[in-house]
Image (tube, rainbow, N blue to C red; front, side):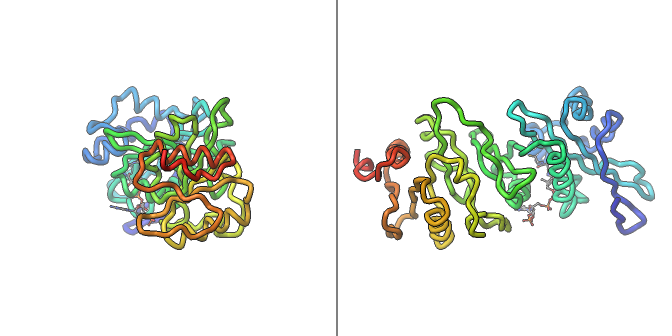
Length: 304
Ligand SMILES: CC(C)(COP(=O)(O)OP(=O)(O)OC[C@H]1O[C@@H](n2cnc3c(N)ncnc32)[C@H](O)[C@@H]1OP(=O)(O)O)[C@@H](O)C(=O)NCCC(=O)NCCS
């Protein structure tokens, strides 16, 4: 329980089936933009959806609500965070905070949910986030997100965060016939990731250090579990950060092949590292990645 000015308190507790009406009121109080961000629709969700949500614990998932009490506001649900169990063993995250209590309650309830998930043995939580939802992306970025996939119309990215470590585990087990490509790129998506998927790669995009996230293992001199689980890495982090991370990979995990994608106008810096071609199509770029993954240097592939 947190005390607020004006003799009010916010209590965080497990979601109960009887919270359905409080959740309905919370969603009914939200503006269209927030509804779209939360539910990908400008209308509050149907009653049946909310009632099912309030029973998330019956399905092995986790639900939390924050309840505001005080003069004139007894028992108002002001935030919710829920995590449905997914077939891959991870959780699927959804979260809402009433506009009056934003600025602190989002990180607070998210951390509580993540801790509860870890206690329940859920290794990571995933979420579909609109690319325009900067607060949600910032919230997850601070907790070491990696991008799993993206789609257009609406422009969304599927992201994953760990519940127990600094970086998430690879969200997919080793899948027959597929290799793993880790891309280090400031956004949670990469221009050639669809081409790489089409070429038989599971692609995870790590935005690297920054955005007030300081958990990057490479910068701490520790091997990165994402690199360890990859067949090939593309370092597309610009500037000094990219150089430092690249250097760390060479020192700490030298057996994992790495390509670099340098910004236009930058000269290849590190000898022995394959630079991806610039100004070529995504298929050509992925062709070089494939050659490097198979032990080649990638040289020449750019021109084919
Ligand atoms: C997403 C949400 C839960 C975040 O809760 P919150 O209490 O607002 O969280 P914060 O105020 O701490 O903001 C989170 C981060 O976004 C940043 N942020 C806030 N507004 C921002 C903006 N307009 N642009 C960029 N970043 C912004 C904050 O600085 C903070 O980053 P930091 O931790 O690095 O400082 C809340 O905004 C919400 O309920 N939104 C509507 C529903 C929704 O989008 N749900 C997520 C669906 S996946």
